[in-house]
Length: 73
Image (cartoon, rainbow, N blue to C red):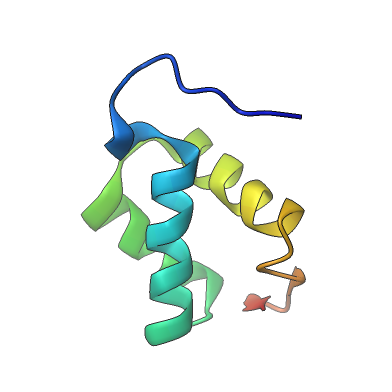
């Protein structure tokens, strides 16, 4: 599976958003609610892109699971 961004706006690509989410996870908090709050306030309002980005991080092995409100990486 290849994800192609035809939008030509890197700030709206799954790759870019995933990198920002992962950076926040590693440096700040692994709490799901705080990651989602950070995403909505600093990255993008589109909730679907948030979930696609989390899926992408899971597919490439950067996060293992989400359980008990914590994102395990």
